[in-house]
Length: 540
Image 1: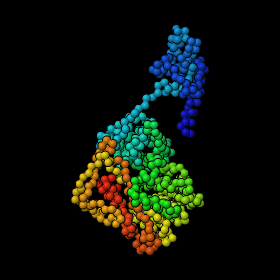
Image 2: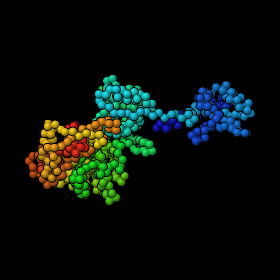
Image 3: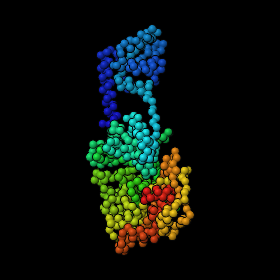
Image 4: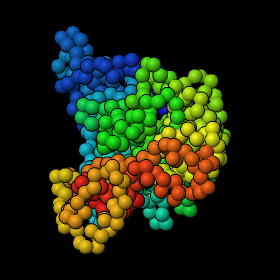
């Protein structure tokens, strides 16, 4: 039974009790359910404080021959009813009283005296050692009404552009952290009472058990309103029992369909041309490589959007579905309940798709099935956990084995990371010291011949400068990509023509063919003033 059904049953019981009470005290009973939300309110009969103190509500003002009608409850003093009757009798005006339920009285008072909307201060992210700021936000959370704590935290996380909310039980308190631009920031310490309200609301909305002794996964969708605009927020929920209680991580996906666009990824011309060329072919496999939170899903969805047309049949297998794409068949795969991507893939291939996206290749069965699909006339997109393209290619060989038939299956591997972007309005240029210059020269010492080399003798770097709009000197993130195009030279590792199939040998060959590594891409971005060397080192 949902909350609306529970409330409806309570109302029915309340009305039945009021009806019986009316017969006992001799006042006509009135059921106001059909008009209590639409009937015009009556001014000039009673003041709001009097309505509260006497549990009485005006229904009509009356007229020259019409009586004044008032609604009372079982808690209205009999003496008050007589007093009101005498007051109007002196003016030769009749009065009529009707008994209503307590539920009806509360509904009318919500209209006569609506609750004032409380506007809470916005949460501000703080540095890890800024205890005063954490204490201030903690006090703010304590002031938020208990029934609004959950929605307030979600709204604030969305306003901050956070990708995650972490609720973490510790020995003496519950810590709240939010991940903004890839960095976890401490926000507040939540009291036990507020935590219970939050986790109870999470349990209800996400349909997870707060008493479970196993990790759980779920999904929530909620509307966020900003002024006159409303957008849908997709939230992936992960809970896990810990030593001190149930921890929760809420991953927020606040992109809209128009953001899932290849043009929005900010790829340079060469990287974009490589992706466009590969996905223009009707078959083959494209693997997105990187850890959780590196933007793999956003890139894959952007590619799907680019391919989405009435001429193509596109099917995705996801665990869970992170965003709904019109015109694409998306199938949820509950891997936690025994489902598998391999089994789902074999089923959907019978539907004759042109493009298939697999949420993640995790095992040998899925890898082999995906490879077979890619060489039999399907374009297959998927993600893969590995640190680099060469590591992913080596691991894929371990999964599917050396096989000449599979050599042309994988066409492109893309390792991706997200780096915080410097705020162009506040960033400050500086001259690097000799040690930094030496490190940059070593990092870019082996750039491929086709890449324009920067002046490594005279260059500037940039540092973040905090401001009100960007408290850490960064705003948003940029994508850096390491792209391994699987050409004839790289195919030899999967054909069995190469003795050494280790990561180092594969990377050496790919670099010889013009591949820029993630580190090189990151350092070049720092030299362009898009990010900092500190950020490159933090991520890579």
